[in-house]
Amino acid sequence: MTDSNPSAVRQVEVAIAGAGFGGLCMAVQLKKAGIHDFVVLEKGKEVGGTWRDNQYPGAACDVQSHMYSYSFETKPDWTKRYAPWNEIQQYILDVTAKYQLRPHIRFQQEVVSAVFNEGTGRWVIKTAAGDTIMARYWVLASGPLHVPAIPDIKGLKDFQGKVMHSAQWDHGYDLRDKRVASIGTGGSAIQYVPEIAPKVKQLHVFQRTAAWVIPRDERSYSALSKKIFAALPFTRTLHRWRCYWTNESRVWPILNPWMAGIGEFFLKKFIAYQVKDPALVKKLTPDYTLGCKRVLISNKWFPTFNRPNVELVTDGVKEIRAHSIVTRDGVERPLDCIILGTGFVVDPRIYMKGFELKGRRGHTLAEDWKTSPTSYLGITTANYPNMFQLVGPHTGLGHNSIIFMIEAQVDYIIKCMQLVKQKGVDYLDVKPEAQSRFLQDITAALQGTVWSSGCKSWYQTADGINFAIWPKSTWRYWLETRTVEQADYEWVQCGRQRPEQDAALAQNAG
Figure 1: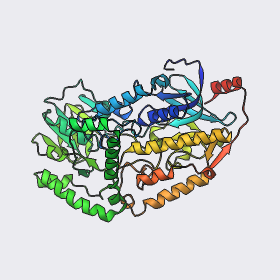
Figure 2: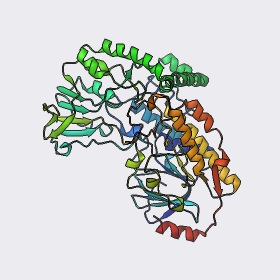
Figure 3: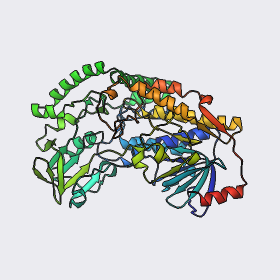
Figure 4: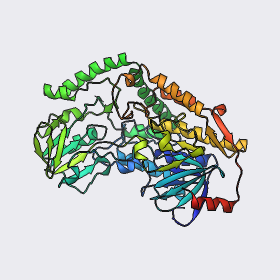
């Protein structure tokens, strides 16, 4: 199945976009459910998604290893409480091998269009390589963190030195004794900045907004711990649940801003303790409510600014010249290298721009999501039958493991597929009123949280609509996805056409 034949039309039961944690989880559970007729379309050359691409120095997960893994495939020998990127990637490779997923994966197959045909009840999916796939079910598992965000800075393209994004790290470039600028102070920057600071001649860290950073309980698992985890699998489960509830406790200050104030008091003390210069302490202390933006975890971030070769720059960038950066105060800093720690494009209206996605009754996702992305349970979208999303709108997290959400969504999707088969229909389509009711519930749940305090973050659209985050405890999401509310869906039997007509439609679709 990994071989590509652009002239052929392949018909499958399920087509999945993306071979990261979401797409692979979907593939494993399909096999467990007895559904083997599926294909995974991956735009890269290997599985892993985020963990394949993010290989910058210090790259690691900010969720505990035992929680940032599948519940059905726990691992006894994680080396650290917070695993580095290469160990997570190896875990993904091991899962792919164990469940024999490679025969289902087609690499370097970037999807460019997906069109639903109401006559056949099938999705017609086309890739940049020229392949066409017809599928009963269409699962978007590309995730929100796969398109690097490149800032629109005057002169960036004219810089004569080295430029690299953290997700496209060039390990062949030697940073030793270089004058380096790091733009951005998000989740990637707080990991690579402390790692490269001792190597470079001068490091200018450009900060637009300070981040709340909490201490990291960093430690290695002992040989004895690994032996116990291996010999007694239930201990892995217990440890996993301990991690889960520890993480889940972080949501309470988010849902109750008065509690966030208590956390801020202690974190300000933490910053003052770790940073020697009072002026730097002030610059590194956020002016927004704890939890409004992603809370970061590090023990190395603040002490890095005590180094004589590290400068925190809070004046905005005016322009980039051939060999320097000029800030708005007129100061010019000579540079050899610019590192973009600017994260990813998370708004699907932007990163899916140019991607044709058509549903029923002439609906296009670009038009339907023009104001803000929204989906029922973050999984199904009205007028896009048999289309499912993993980590769709409203289901991102800022406090716990996203894999918990992915597993709940995959379980829900499997149940939807089984109901379609049991009912003898061709497809299900969530009712617009059910989707609207869900959105109203999400909007109401956001009221009174830190996200309703007027702060801005990547969780929101430019207009301030919070489309990304799940505003409740994750166990509540698990409960809401345990069963499929059949009354919230339309169950449709369409007139079937002959196989030769299916093939002709596939050739002409899109």
